[in-house]
Amino acid sequence: MFRLFRPTYTVHGDTRQSRVFWAEFTMMNGVKLRESLKTRTWETAWKVAQAREEALLLEQARNAQKSPQTRRRPRDGSKPSPAPADPSTAILDQLQPILAQALAQAISGLLAGQLPQAGGKTLRQACNDFLRTLKATRDKSTFMTARSALKRVLEILGRDRPAESITQAEVIRLIERLKAEKLSARTINLAVSHLARALGGTVRSLWPSIRKLKENTDAGRALSDQEIRRLLEEADRLAAGQEKLILSDSRRGEWTQTAGPRGVLLPCFLRLLLFTGMRSGEAKTLQWRHVDFQKGLISVPGTKTDAARRVIPMHPDLQRVLETHKAWCEERFGEIRPEWFVFPAGSPAPNNPRKPVSDFKHGWETIRERSGVQCRMHDLRHTFISRLAESGVPEVTLMELAGHVSRSMMLRYSHPRIEARREAVQAIKL
Image 1 (cartoon, helix red, strand yellow):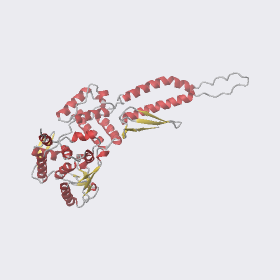
Image 2 (tube, rainbow, N blue to C red; image 1 turned 90 degrees about the vertical axis):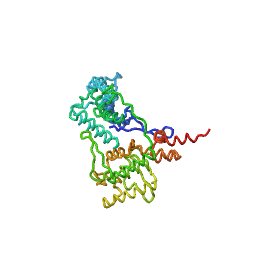
Image 3 (cartoon, rainbow, N blue to C red; image 1 turned 180 degrees about the vertical axis):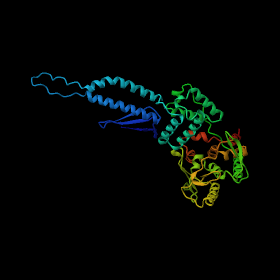
Image 4 (cartoon, helix red, strand yellow; image 1 turned 90 degrees about the horizontal axis):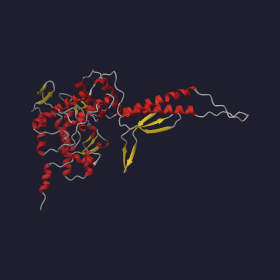
């Protein structure tokens, strides 16, 4: 028997977890052995551990066969006759070189990323098997990211083709196709990496000539007061039904939605991001039990890291917006329960408070188009952090409010706006 784990260790007082998996083997005699498997992926670690366990059991059996047998010395003082040869020992001696060579090849192949190929499977079946393993061993956000990436890969390469038929030239064309769709380098790299893992290998082992695209390390930008005002004004107009929602589809093109008010959740949602610096995923999964109107606090459940779980005081303007939004939800659903979501699911209008809203894509694109502000929704978080940094908030407090785990990560987000830089330069007197 064996179990997989990643050991923890301490460096300068900080507790860290090993990136590679280890295995603890329990032998037949109760002895426990621990060894590094030298791999970061759970699937590879499991297969290496299985191969290693077989090698240990074989070695233990062979040692048992070689243990000396005690024989009584004859009364005449002569040496005892040798023990009769055990036929199983001869068989083991013959099989040992063969098994050792096969085992060495298997382990070296696994550590190099050459997992057993998905022979006989379609590409859809290989991807589904990989996603099931990922869902059982990783967090939800990792699984959702992989599923989204592989969905587009299947649409381009074909679902029912043999999994082993994917060539390097096809992967290169896949990358070019995703580039043409204006996907980020990060998204494309993830799609190719997940495809390789679904096929039982790595990008390097399956397609040696393919290199990762250079990813953008720019954390984003902070918005100006005028840009924020234009975005919120357009969000209010869309929710009131004064603007038509712009929709788009790769097959149907672009059209407008005129059936009543749309994007009714966006005015409150965008203000929540601006006043708290919450990530979009954190805000979508926010429940009413996380909002304490009496104390004026929001308990962020956290969806990314342990440090993401935090408590943020509510700005008075945000509290008024949330109270108005709560009254709207009570009128629409008849009541408010603690486990219900602040931003409920439903289309074209919210209708299920037991599930969180999944997407603001069309509404957000419409607001950006009408306001003329080119930004990402994540830039609202940048704006919050940058404003705190400019106002002189201590670094520790800023990290606690933002939910960052390191100072280097915090510095990526809290770069000052150009207005603050101009004021700093103009303050110089010579």
